[in-house]
Length: 352
Image (cartoon, rainbow, N blue to C red; front, side, top):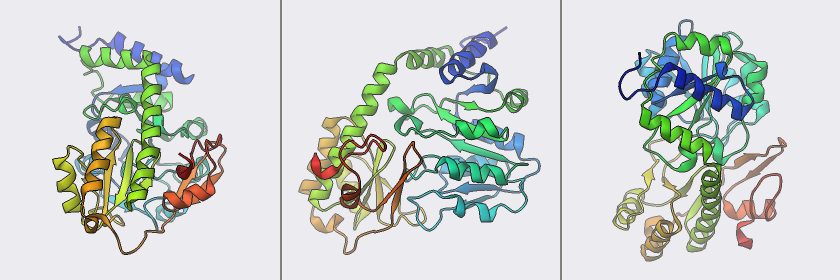
C-alpha cells in the first residue's frame, strides 16, 4: 500500500519505462530520484565499500562535497591546469588501483568545462573495478552524452536532471542510468519510492512538453550570445559556456555583486574556487532580466570590472563529431568559429 501523497511502486516503474523509452533503454536501467544530494550520498555509500576516496575531475561543487562527507569519503579534487577544460590526462594519474570512485560533471556545474567521449572512455578503462559517475545535469544545453561509454562499461553510472532544461533551479529531481544489475542492486538500498504525486505530475508534464523545452534552450542560447557580445563591447571579460550561465572576470566581485543585486541581476562570486579568482557567474534569464544586467554594467564605474590583464587560458568545446575547438575569450572564439557552425552549434559573436 502506498503512502498518502506518494506515488505507487507501479507508477515509479511506469515512470522508469517512460524515461527509458525516450532513450531506447530498458526501464530496468533507469532509477528516478527526488533530491540529488541524497541520491549521491546513498550511491556513494552503496558503491564505496572498496574505495578510500572520491576523485572529482574538475571543480567540485558543495553538493558533491556534502554527499562525500555524509558517505565518509574524502574528496580529491583535480581541477587540472585550467578549470575551463576537462581532460583525461588530469584524472588518470590519480587512479592507482582501479577501485576508485570517479565523479565527472560534464559539463561542469561551475565552469561548463566538459570531457569528450575519448576522455570518458579512457577514464572508464582505468577504473574497471571501481565506479565512474558522469553527471549530465546540463545535457539539455550540450549534446555529448556518456551513454556510448555506458554501453561498453557496466561500472559507469549517468545522472541526469529532469528540470534543469526548464530553468527550474529549486528542484533537484532526476534519474540515474546504469546497467540493470547495478540499478537493481541499488534499488534495494536506496529509498527511491518517495516521489510525491505533485512531483510525478510535473515530471510527466515536462517529458511531454518538448516544445517548451526546445523554446527555452533556444532562448538561452540566443541570450548567451547577445549578452556576451554586449558585455565584450563594454569591456567586461566574459566566457560563454555550454550551459545556462555566463562567467565574467571582474576587478571587484564584491562591488559588482552588490550593485547588480540592487538592479535585480544577482551573480555568484566564484573566487573561492581554485583558479577562479575574480570570476563571477550569471545565470541566463529572460531578455528583460538580462537587460537589467546590461543596464547595470553600463552605469557601473569601469574600475569595478576592468582588469589590467586578460585571462588567456583556453576553453575547449567538444563537438559531436569529436573535433575540438580551443579558444580563449569570446573575441578569440570569433576568429575560429564561423557563424551558425553546423558541427559545433556556435555562432561568431562579432556577426550578430
